[in-house]
Length: 374
Ligand code: PLP
Image (cartoon, rainbow, N blue to C red; front, side):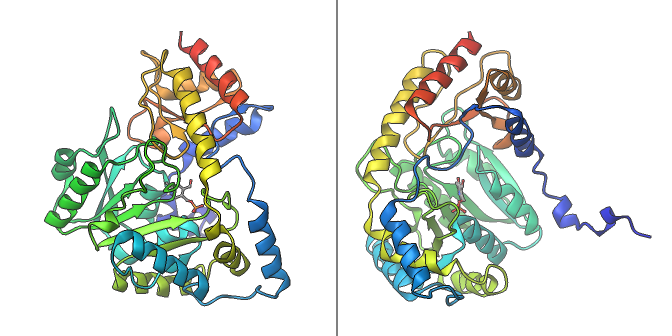
């Protein structure tokens, strides 16, 4: 007789999520920690957007939507994104947030054995989704300043390379790719005939310029742009995102969505279309810029740390002589919850702080971390 373990697929076993689970297990034991581990905004969904969702529910918008999403949302996003990218983006697919878009894009592109370049440190989901699709993640080191290094990327390319994953502003480093970096990435993709997936979920959260994010999709039409409302409007539980890119890939993604997610939740699509798109996130952006400055100035005297330009993360180096895991264990003993770099990286030298929390918590937590680093 087979043991239950024998029923578990190689695909599932191939995904090792133990790093992040260890952190959650530790967190569960802490009482009222200073929690720098949470990757979501510290504000609630703005009231007018909640109201729009309630109205959609009361109006009976509770059924499946079309697989590709409701027309008013798709049409508006297509118009806005086309204006931004300077060309018609074609049909936009409304996804079950950016995670849904990532899964469908990777499943639509990657054959078993295909290689994808992922810049290290990376958002942890990429590696696991690529594994699920049978692909190989080829990490390219971006330490110490988390920039795009064209020479390092070129060295990692083989005849099996198909995909370049980009994420700016980046989770976990907060790095925002400059125009030169985006251009270099696009030049490499063009030269080596690669497709780009550009995860732009933190797109509104830019702190060092009033210019909009430069999407590689503006320079290179073989780019799948993924964006969403989870972070911008604190709608992480509502699951609304979107994908735009080459028509043939988007139509494959739509087909796969039909047999997996079916659609993004209908009332929340209406809330996004009716309200979220009319509510710029200027206030949250200013608040996070201030918090970014606060955390950077509190840590930069004691830690080797790069000032992040976006998102709400900072990625300092652990004190000399310590792995990040050791330093995080010490921080957790002192009631500060941070995540070791090895969750997001082949290295274990840095740690991630999410500063989407109250100013006084930032102050207290940074004081403790600086004391521990002495
Ligand atoms: N991409 C990045 C870089 C993220 O940090 C996250 C969430 O933390 C996601 C995608 C997934 O977000 P969602 O599926 O809520 O849109």
